[in-house]
Amino acid sequence: MTRTDSERPTLVILAGGRARRYGGVKPLAPVGPGGEAVIDLLGSDAIAAGFSTLVLVIGPATGPAIRYHVERTWPGDLDVRFAVQDAPLGTVHAVLSAAEHLPAEGGNGGGFGVANADDLYGQEPLALLAAHLTGEDPANALVAFRLHNSIVGHEPVTRGLCTVDGDGLLEGVDERRHVVRLLDGRFVSEDGREPAELSPDALVSMNLWGFRPALQAVFEAAMADASLETDDAEVLLPEVVGEIVAGQRAVPGGATFRVVPAEGRCVGVTHPSDLALVQTDLCQQVGRGDRPAALWEDRSAALG
Image (cartoon, rainbow, N blue to C red):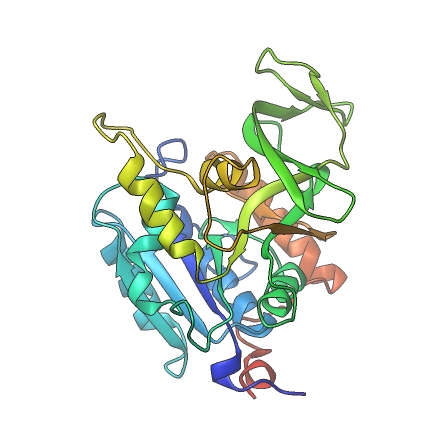
């Protein structure tokens, strides 16, 4: 059964990051087989996966370049909107910057998705998220990936390891820093904590969330509670979600988070050296038939 536009969810794409480690505009990094940018592939995947509206949250520094690129190269019949995050106060603030484009509590919308603009999740994981948002399960959602499917190269990254209860609900996200893949294929965290070696099959968060409308008020409260006096102060989605699942932040009516495991690859550009690795990985995905060779080719079926 084909869903109408009013039944398809909205995806908020967080494209306002400062990219201090990468040193460039990561959403515009040319990673596709034909030089397509990260944000091109992400947008094409999201529409094919069942999202109808894409809200790009951009910052004042790199936002004009991203908007110029999208408006000149994306199909004109897409419902693409822009929201400006006027200060780099973290991912919670970024989501709130898009509030005017999101479903209101008590309205017809069942929720909205959130994704990074510098990660490529693939159509199937995005489709899992879209299906959850339009399904009967009232829980919020986190689409989680296996650790070994979330890392390219051998440079250190940060990964949030998910703790999941017997009902598939999120109990917590443990941020492990300086996670590296060793040459022998093992994964270790060099943050000085135990265990140092991490299971390659561990579920990790890559910031692919599904939120019910009631969470917007919780995000507003989190921003109001935060101390943002330093230049690098941020309020982050994993931290607020962690407070919710730990019972440290109240949600009217309660809130749970369903962990939806995805078995595909999630690749992104964190370090400059990742660019060539991601390009190779995506070419291999196209060669295996894991992703389409051309942008927007599944758009007609997705839009009905």
